[in-house]
Length: 490
Image 1: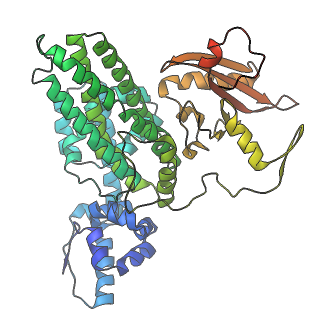
Image 2: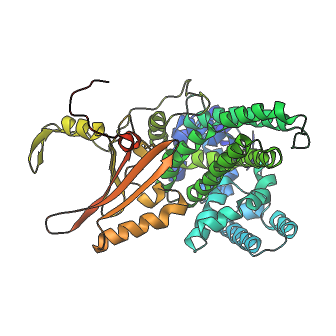
């Protein structure tokens, strides 16, 4: 048997199952191999060389260990193909990774400073050559930590994607079993791709139908764009499920950047639908073309960067929580999780409930009654603790804005679109300083009149306890006139 640095970890562990425990005991970084899902996904694309980099050891050292285990356990003869010089020493491998990140940072900063793209593409090919989704995420996080605003990264993200495109497209998307959250995301993307293809066909080769064609095209475009708008539920799940889990692993930048792009796409949906409703042929067609290009680009970012990175980073418990929370938000295009993979039972509340009564200032109530009261109030309630982390939300069927259990413990600034974070921060800081006790907003949303209040909670001594957010659909209340003093069942 010839063992090389390019040998697949998945193939090796499938042929020699004893390597799973052996590698886990050899290096803590390889304990993930005990997870069957990760072996089926990341393991399929991870070579011995990549595994050595993840485990921060030399390629030669890992090759020698694997060969020794196989020979000792099976008696087979194993020949090792020596790796190149760069993989011989662990320190050199680590230095190479640091050099790659430094080179990437320099290229991206040059890109933001306006250096010609073709020049940087050539520099990228010579100094980096290829890149993994994990390296892209680490790059974004490093740039944000060093002070580059997420909005600036978002502004250049299409050029980033173009810079990395050739390297990323050569990598295989890990396979996941039906029922897994990523499998469901991919099913939704497949439906979105079909709709995008139909929209391109309706627009025609010129991307702008003629005056004669327009009456026949308009109705079809309006219907297809409305159907494609269902992808926004897919985005909401990412924002409330995947992004909080990435934050747990100290990767907040990719989610923040992607959320900003989500908001841009939402704006493009609104503009395209408004122009189509106004029967605007030229601007409407251009807006639809712009929209589908953005949605298609987001799909590429998900499948080349976000999903492979999540499969590498998130644990089995993370995926369980993700799957159990997904149902609360819903799915796009009628897609539902189905198949062999199912989430194990986990406590989304973070601990077992206790029996007994809750002592309140004006009485005592069983815990289940307190929960039932909060969930049946005709308003949405959320509570942010003094450290600005979400500690509670009322899990009611009538919620205006989606929530899932992944939000608990999350910094509240990460629960809002990046463009409104400054306002949330300003409110909380004013509450903490004792300068304000209330902030009030109202807006029209989908034909509804939404009223939202932020309230500072304080104890009897005036110490700040946290922020209570109360939101409600006040459309009905706003419409009431006169009086009703007698019982009238509706």
